[in-house]
Structures are given as structure tokens and as C-alpha cells.
Image 1: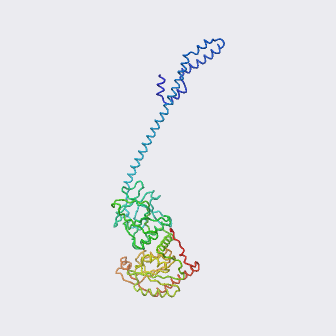
Image 2: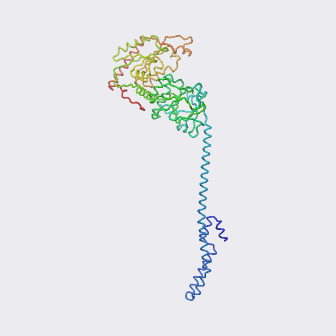
Length: 511
């Protein structure tokens, strides 16, 4: 019994030893019995009687051998029963431990996500540290962020993206007077701020240092979105727009700009007002957002022309303007006039001068129109017939990109602009180049209202900005004659090469 108790308490390794190697006493007894049997058998094979042979195989010895066999068998069965039981217990312990570890990991992850959600940090949209150089570098709008920019392409930020580490853009605040009270943050989808609202789809977020009512400033702000749409967005259309001016929310575009964007993206733009999402402290995060804050900066002329081509094409489709069958022998000269500030003092004399020069050129047709009493589609139709645009400096000149490429522009300024108006006076030179037009220079009136300050004093701009434009019959006639002759020669060359208007077969990108 002592040997059995030890076996019951032993490890599986001990069981194996007992099973494969019997105790020495038993083994020696069995060997001795076998050897004695062999010796006696050899010596007495012929001499031992049956009675003597039977005495060596007594029942006592048989019982002893049987007991050994039974003991070994029992030990083997005990081992075979205990080993599976040991492994089952081990599996149960392992499964229990794994479940507990998974629960602990899940609880830890949930707690970490909650902490990350609570630790999302919002920064002011307008960083006042850069207020003195808001148009330089990376701007004061979302100042901690850097744009994605490939050479000659549009500069933009996209969320989520690799550069944002797949984080979403979140905005908070509804202030329309001080952009420093509005804020932004980045957050992973699993760790968004508490009580957040998710804006589905693509949202265009625009920063404009000026405004969205003026068609020039508004167009400058949206052109980069058109460029992204064609180059990076794979023609994806925005669900909504969020508009900022100096970090302050704006809730609308001018009608001209809104109509143009509706035509370009096949649907009226929806301007987000953040109504119905709670108080100003409630955050809004965007499933996908594209942010522009540099207008057309960084884009090559070719990329800008692509954007203007798309807008021209889509505007003509929207307004049902067809270029089919247009006579290349006709030259459309359009005098696009203003009322009030920067209008001509003697409008009738100016019109008469250009009308006289137009009449000297076969096929020239003079049109006189006023920008303030035309609908968007009426302007699109007018510009599609215009080869030479004659107009004072002003936002109405923005319509020039609606003409065919290589059309001509003649611009007029009142007194005083050259010295103190700054680079802004050249914006229509720029848009002419960017949209593929030919700017034929500008006439600057040397006469006009006098300023009480020195002529180069910037305070004089308040006098000159809204001045009116005079008249120089000789210069205007000579200028008009030269431009008309150049355009005539160009159109004759196009007619001989193509036989028809090359724009009639133009297909819109992102149709």
C-alpha cells in the first residue's frame, strides 16, 4: 500500500517511471525463478518425475506473479485516467484566464477612448499671433496645420488623411464677429468629443480674407475647390460648404457665385449654418472635409486654366448656351459698362468712339451692356459672344473667363490708382492670364478729383477708389483699332485651320 500511495501522489513523470520499470526486488525474484527453472530443467529433464516438476509451479508463485501483473495494470489505468483530467483542468484554467484578459483589455481600451475623447483640444480658428501677416506663410486660419502641396498644384488640407493620421476635423463655435471664438480640433473616429454631431459626406471648408458677395473675391476663394475636384477629388461633389471670413462664419454666397457653383457641381451649394445641433459649445466633426485657405496660390497657369475651363463649360450647359454654328468671321466687341463708381464721365462719347472703329472692321458687332441689370445666364450668354471685352476696372470684369480662350480685354482706371492702389489693381491682369485670355493693357486717367493729401498718401485712396473715368478720343480710337486688327487676324487664322469654332466640340471635365 505504501507504494500505491506514493504513486497516487506522484507527478505524471513518476507514473511513467513506475510503469516502465518495476521495482528491483520483484524483477530479481522473477529472474531468479526463471534461471532456477532453466537449470533444473536441464539437469533433470530425464530424471525429474512429474511430481517434482509440479512442485516448482506452486499456486503461491502463480499468485505472486499474478499480483504483480494486476498491480502494474492498476497503476497504468490510474495514470491514464489522471493525465486527461489534468489537461482538462489546465484548458479550463487557460480559457478562463483568456476571457478575463480580453475583458480587462476591452475595459482598458474603453477607458482609454473615453479619456482621449475628453482630452480633445480645440484651438482658435483665428490665431491672433499672426494678425499682422495673415496673408503670409500658412495664414492665421488654423495656424497649427500645414497644407498638402505638390508642385504646380492646389494647396489644401484633407481630413481624414495620412497627414492627419486618419483623424477627423472637428469645429466648434458659431461666432460671426470674432473668429478667435471659433475653434478647431482633430480627433480619431473612435475618440470624438462628447456630444458631437457628425456631418456626413464631403464638406468644403473655405477661408476668405475678403468676402463671398463680391464676385472676384468670392471666385478666388472657390477656384481651388474646383481644381481639387478635378485633380484630387476624382470629380467628387460636396454635400455642404462651410464659409469663413477671418475665422468668422458666413452663411451665404452672392447670387452670381452661388449660381456658378451650382452649375459647376450640378446642384445649388448648401451653406452650413449649424442650425439644430445644440449650443455653441457643441462640436461638429466631418466624415470628410477639404479645407482651402490660400485661394489660387501655388497653382500653375495650366492648372488654373483647367479650373476656369470647367466652370466656363458647366456654366454654358447650365444656361443652355451652344457654340455650334458660330460664325468665325464675326468679332464681338462688348462694352461692359458700370454705373456710379468707376463709370465713364462721358459714356456716350466713349461708346461712339468704339462704335466708329468697330464699323471699320468687317464682321465686327458692338454690344453695350450694364453688369448690374443682367442675370447670371444673361452674362454667360453675352460673354460667349464676346471676343473683345471693354470695361472699367471692377468686379464685372470677372466675367471675362466666360469668354472663349484667347479673347481680349481692355481695362480703364480713374486717376490715382497706379501709385497707391497696391497689387489689387492687377487682379484682372491675373485672371486674364489664368483663364487663358489676352489682357491688352489699361488706360489710366491722368485727370480727376484732387486729394488734399500728397498724391502718394494712402488716405487719398478713399477719394480715388470711387472716382469716375474721363475720355481721350485719340488714344481710345488708336487702341481699339490695334486690338480689332489683331483679333481679326487671329480669327482668320483659326477659320483657315479649323473651319469652325474649336470650342463647339469642347467636352466638360467631370461631366
